[in-house]
Every structure is written in C-alpha cells, then in structure tokens.
Image 1 (tube, rainbow, N blue to C red):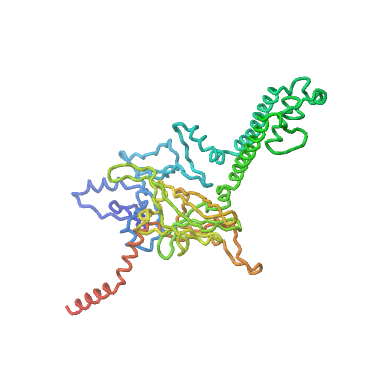
Image 2 (image 1 turned 90 degrees about the vertical axis):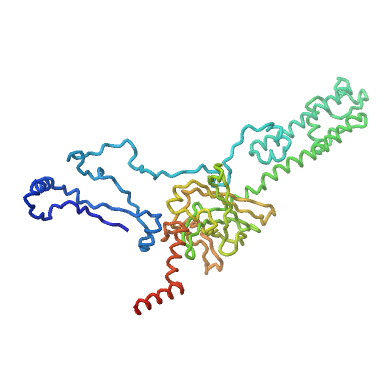
Length: 461
C-alpha cells in the first residue's frame, strides 16, 4: 500500500520550460537560476496506518502491511536556510531508539517454574502465628531447616530426659561410692536403674527408653516409683515425636509441588488463525506415564484497569475462556495438548492488534490442576506468559506421531516448544471481523436482490 509521490510543482532537470513573456522575464530568470537539486526528485514514501480499517478495506491484498516511518525533509539533506545545506548533528541517543518503539515490560508475578514472586513485610506477630502452625511451617521450610529441627528434636529430648534420670538417681543415692554397681553386691543396695555410673550412663539409658531399644543391661526396678513413671512418660513421648517428625518428612517428600516439576508448559504462547478467527494458544504436557486424573486448566489475565470512578487497579484479574479442541477445560491428559482461547467479543484481546500486544503491559497466568494417579493427592502446576512471550503469527508443531514399528503413539518432546510461522493478519480480531462482515455483505441475498433491482431500474430509464 505504498504511493510514490513526486513533487511536480517545480521543474526537474530534464523538463523544458516554455519561453516566458517579457513581463515575466525577471520571474523566469529567477526560476532558471534556482534550478532544483536532484535531491528534490527523491520519492517520498507515505505508509498507511496498519491499524486503520479504511486502509485495509480499500486494498485487502496488502497483508502484511510494512510500516515505514515518515522522516523530515532535513533527514534527506534538502537545502534549507537560504540554500545552505543542512548537516545532521551526531545524536547522543542510541541509533536503535525510535519514539514509540520502547516495549513495556511487566514485572512477572508468577515465574516460569511456578513460584510466585511475592514478598511480605510488616506482619504483626509473624513468628508467633507461624509457631502456632508448626507443622505447616516445617513442611514449607527448606530441607536444611527441616533436617536440623528433626535432629535437634531427638538430641535435645535425649539430653532433657537424661538430666531427669540423673536427678532421680542422684536423689535416691545411687551415685554414692558404696552404691555404685561394682559395690552393690557387697552393700546389698537396690538402685532405681541398674548399671548406672554417671550422666553418660543416664544419657544412654534415655536413648534406650525413648526408642525401646532394650539392650538388656540397664533396667528399672521396683525401688523407685518416680523412675517407673518417667519410663512410661518417655516411651509415650518417643512414639509421638517419631510419628510427628516422620510425618513431616513424608509430607515434605510427597508434596504436590514435586509432582508439578514433571508437568510442562510451552516456553511461548502463540496467536494465529483457526477457522477464520484469531486464537491464543499454549501447550501443556506431562513427562510421566502415571497420568493426571481429572485434569483442568485455567488462565487469568493480569493487567492494569481504570474504573469509571478513576480508580486504578494495577493487578486486575480477568478469567479467560479456554479449552482443548472441543472438550472444554477438562482434559483427557494422556499426551501434550494445545490449549486454545478464542479471541471473540468476550475476550480482553478483542481490540488488540499485533502492535498493541508488543506495547501493552500484561501477564497471562496459566494453571493446571488434577489428581496424581499413583498417590491420589491433588497437584497444581503454574506458569505465566508476558506480552513479549506471545508470538504473533506462529503455530505449534505437532509432537504426537504414530510409530508403526512399535505400534504406539510416540511423543517427541524435543519439538515441544517448536513453532512455525504462518500468515496471520496484523490487525485486531474486531477489525478482522468487520472486514469479514463487509465482505459477506456483498454476498448476501438482500444485497444481490438490491443490485439486480438497481440495474433493472437503470435499464428501464
């Protein structure tokens, strides 16, 4: 859609000028003396606005539209300032910079691996609230802290109960010189716990009691009721602490977050035509043979929105209608699937063209949820796409092929992120629908009947 306009108001070098009349001699002399430089014959390129619907309708064969920015006359070195040449000064800005070409990059709320980019501050009584939910705190903490708490919970309990055993034995008098194990037969002394020589022996007996090891050397007697009570209490505590810490480690190892590491999202989302309309698509896959039961997928758009009252909502969520083929958001997730969002009147992308996608500021968050077949636990995998991670005019390559030799469907994950560039209009879905309506308007029966009636009336006249 380029129009080459030549400046025909002034004569060129090869043009002939008619002989002027005497009264116009002076004007003709000035005109001849000021012949224009060949630079004035340089064609000026005028480009139509790629987002203009009128320009698209007037020439529908112009896809894709090439955008060439208009440049001032001084850029081409036209004589200015009394015929003196104008020399362009060196610019301090980068030559790659053009006004309006800077892309707005949004700060990502959800990373590609699914972690949320969230920081919290100014929480009142944070430590107390976290200690009240100790189980969740230990499960969510890093492994080094969980293992440290796991080890300290046993070591400190062994030392605490060893101190209690030492106090019981010390108050009973079993640590006196004549009451030690090597003199008990001579003195006829009956200790609370046999084979105790000091605090080290109490520490070993505490470990044996808490974990019911029972080596058979150190045993309690009927001499001290407090020793019997302490043995029962420590045995109960040992079972409870082992179950609690073992449950934390098990829950941490079997978290749904670990299963989500084998659920894949495509690196880029794409926009192309499907059945005549524009669609936004991304791909999801599962690396394991144990499938996700009841898999569902959701997508939400985060962008800035201003209300009618002037309130600016910088993190406004919009739910997108998505689905795989014609099965909706519920997936039979046995191989990688392409999730599609049709850009229609209800879509927030309806008025956005390819240029608007690059210059806008938004983030598309996608969520895949389901139940793990092997463990029965629910899992959730997340990812996101910024506006710079949406490829306009691309289509995903197929990854599922039937292998005749192995008699099975084969998935090539090496092509999971591969796309192919296809012809796609650069205008928005709204403008594309209006173009289709105009084209269909000339083909409707009413239009055909009206055209025939007009032609008949003209022939009668």
